[in-house]
Length: 441
Image (cartoon, rainbow, N blue to C red):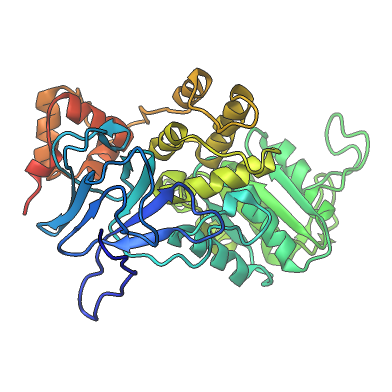
């Protein structure tokens, strides 16, 4: 049995070693256990004390797999365990080079690989009551620090991130942490015509337009003393952006049809699932308005970039839907870890709700047919190709050409082609192509 090894810090001038994180069984209230991969590698198997405690998984063989450093990259090999080693949900045949976020399963024990040494700063618990901010990865820690840094400053904030990452959750946390006594008011800026959005934001006087039978104060005045959350700010019509800029510079609103300005005291938080700076470059968003809104930016990471947070997120989300303490079966945990999550935390919450309904009471949530269907519905594997991407036919010859083009770097290939990395791995393995053989040593 190997002696337990604690995380070590690389000497100055020496690159930090990659790490393996133990993510399932979930360590409860403890922080995720992280083990730097030494140059000589290590053995993974039942009874081996690679982490704080020896593995006790009865489904794991005593000599199950080996992880070693080869040519500067981490390589995993099955040792003829008899119970297959799985990488990203697929049985491992030949040795494979590990890439950022890869999910490794031995028996009923799951790991996530990271090329960057990390020391979690928390035990995977949220800094608030919001389960969406649960996690111990550097990216979500950075979000919590960013929110804490700006919360009490009266600055406009842009929250950016993909659909379902929790942008409104962050906006509400900013409001609660700001010390402002007024209300939190939210509006989705998409789907309004110029006139209707102007009326919604700034209000209108009686008779300002057909149907204006009375005065409306507008959301800026409704949020006086508090926070106004402009969701999907990238959809604000160009014609209205100049008016919004004036409000943010003078903190006065002029209701539609009025000649009188009304002072307001509002903290504005804007969000978009499209990068506003990209819209500026395309001429779809005013650069002066962007500069006025983006006095501080909070960037929410996609769920696929922080897979090791998924077990903690599952437990937090289950508690939110009234299933605190329910455990998750290993098959379901693996499926959740390898999924690309185009709908991010919103998609994860949906799948967990379905699993809860479909699983027998008082038993671990199972990876049943209802959950498989839900994951397929949330797959959206074929993402939209970038505008300049050539049409790609993913036959064996094309895959081989891409491997040569990108030097075997599967993550870059997946972004270029527009599919998830797990799906591209499945394509490569079906075509019997090994990415590691195309990498430049």
